[in-house]
Amino acid sequence: MGTVAPRIRFVLFAAASVVIASVPFLTDDRYLLKILTFVGLNAIVVAGLALLLGFAGQISMGHAAFFGLGAYTSAYLTTAHEVPWLLAVAAGTLLAATGGLLLALPSLRLKGHYLAMATLGFNEIMSVLFVEMRGITGGNDGLSGIPFPSIGSFVIDSPAAIYILVWAVAALAFVGAANLVRTRPGRAMRALHGSELGALASGVNTVGLKVQVFAVSAALAGLAGALYAHSVGFISPSQFSLEFSILLVAMVVVGGTGSLTGPFIAAVALTLLQYVHALIPGLSKDAAALIQDWEVDISGLIMILTVIFVPGGLAAFLKRRRSGAGEEGEIA
Amino acid sequence: MSLLAIRDLTRRFGGLVAVDGVSFDVHEGTIKAVIGPNGAGKSTLFNLMTGFDRPDAGAVSFDGRDIVGMRPHKVVAAGISRTFQNTQLFEELTALENVLVGMHTRLRTGLVGGALRMPWTVAEERRALERASYLLRLVGAEQYAQTHAADIPHGMRRLLEIARALAAEPRLLLLDEPAAGLNNFETQSLSKTLYKIRDEGVTLVVVEHDMGLVMEVSEEIVVIDQGRKIAEGPPLLIQKDAAVIEAYLGEEGAYV
Figure 1 (tube, chains in turn cyan, brown):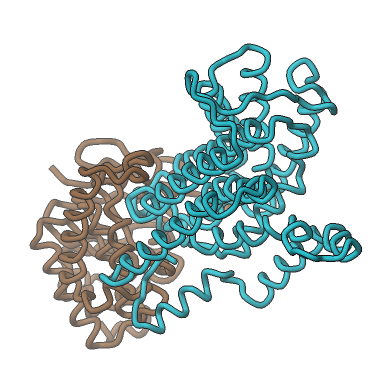
Figure 2: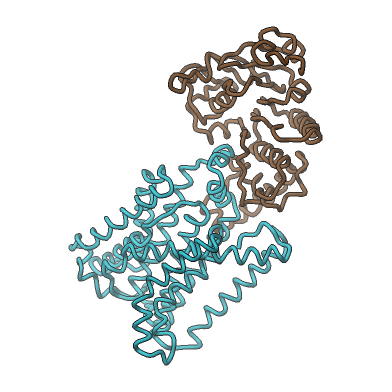
């Protein structure tokens, strides 16, 4: 914890904030704003998943399901019961957190592959429920006509406004996560990852902490899901599949463990990759289709190459560069 | 009254009786050594005293309170800290952060307070940093404050683990082979550190193979062999005890 590094971190954060905040003033391309809103939504989920996987060392292959739980809860409450938006989003977040808690209690006694399998199973079960609970979820047809975010009579209905809302939440999520990892609970998470015996001997209730982090992480996924539902207006089960869970894990793995900056950059890059066909002007139709077909494979390949050649992910690059400048012990 | 009272403690692993009806007391403000050949049951004894393992029979009472069955983190909160024979540091964390984790039970900040960085969180962090720096100085590891544990030399790692254990403000500190792998110079400075810790009012129990250190620092010694207590007393008596020489030191008794 040097004196220079926090300043660098602050400057980086401020610079990123300015760039992100200026986008709506630079473009009014609805599609582009929508894509960048998705980037922000994924970033919110990744903030939570980085805490769980990158800092506490617990894997979840079920975060798409928490995302979906938040989305369906908020969508259902606003469409079927006309619950105010803010309350509905809070309910979606809370239900996802509760789901996380209930999943974590039995499964966090499992380790490594077994925890991965348990959370993967959870995602599959939820996927089936999203289809089968037709009364609430609309089955395979999904739910449509989900209202825009609104507080009282103030409606957030332009792509630019929704973009700002989502990125404001993302900024809060990252600031909160960055604060957390530098104080008592966050240090305990990192300790747990390093040596469970050591953490226990330091008085950390390891089981309780894992459950807490899992719930927080699920809550952020649920929050992002709820925001997603209201920004696109339509949701269906295929959006919350295992494939999305794996993409989220890939973002944290490529971004690197013990880091928030790395996973953030990876979330931006891997989300944009999905829309690269639409983002590059003048790209031929065939090339666009080719990229679209191979997008999942490219993400997978990036993850495999990361694990093999840079196990520390993007964060390892960031740290190496910083410690070269004489600043050790930094969280990138 | 003794700070720690162990009564008829027994732990079996299958057919093996690792700890067999051991009883002894640890008095407040003293340094007690537990010695015995490899596999005598010393580490098992430590695990039973810290909630990492449960005895099949017997009692461990700390300050009049039964601690058998308590989870390890509760034992720490109750006032017993420990180190491990194989150091269990957090390699990716700096030495300072390792000690800060050791203060877990003495700090209050929760998930919400930590994420929002409330004014009291900031104030608590500042106090914690001061105390952690003090503990690093106490064990002589202050120059490694900002170094990752993984990059700290072996001898220092043992001292760092002691600093981390002290961070929980224990009344009783259990050290599992603190001198293992240390050179003579490091062992000398370790014994000074142990005295400093005792002078701060912390009672110590040390499992150790280094007889020089044991004879120098401990006021009382318990000798364990094949899970049983075979002798207990001050160093001078233990050195002359026929059963100890027979069982523990064998033919090479001369090296005491």
